[in-house]
Amino acid sequence: MFRFLFILLVALFWGCCKENACGDCIGTEEDHQLRTTGQCPDNFENDSFENDVPYIPYIPMNWENSSLSFDTVVIGSQTWMAENLRYEAENVACYDNDIENCNIFGVLYDWETAKTICPAGWHLPSDMEWSILADFAGSNVGTKLKADSKLWISGEGTDDYGFNALPGGFYRNYFEEIGETAGFWSATAGYQFGSAHFRYVKYSNDKLNIAGFWINRTMAYVRCVKD
Image 1 (tube, rainbow, N blue to C red):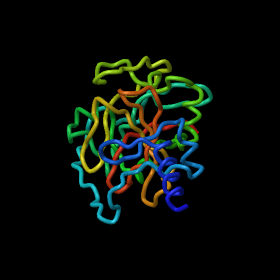
Image 2: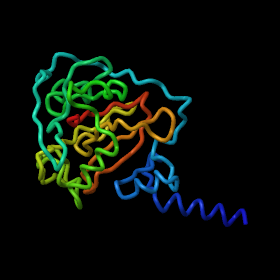
Image 3: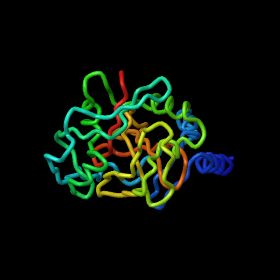
């Protein structure tokens, strides 16, 4: 009986999650409901949280376009920023500590800063608000949100709505996946204490994906949505 239960649990896990080489459980919008019903563990890094070391990225300042103006776009019932936020603050970084990457992709923020950095009348979107966007876009949502840009190593998008998602990567103890991933913080905390949700589109698929990252060592981009 014990062996049967063990096999069943393993089957449920592999049925709703795919792990990459780092052991991250990577999900898409389609399997999000499975996780929220407890059939699949939250997709976060599976190394020891207790042994984490807080990130200490270089913090460049005074890049271009850090003014209060920004482009916006209406998608369905929502109004989104059409570019990643570039506000100066503490606990921010440019990819690879290169100010030019802040000019191209925007600023990488830690989660606590991301939750309060949007200007008045705007806020960091929750998972539900990201899901509303995905539902409106329908099939191939990732392709529709990705910019039609050669900055993607391949699989550039059609940018149907002017969302203009550029592959600026992210920071998770080190900078990674520039050219491959456009990732954004969600305001929704993860199921594991100390984690938060991260929404992203990737060169290799056409989904709006979801992952959970430890907040004390991750920095990501911010797309604000209108109140």
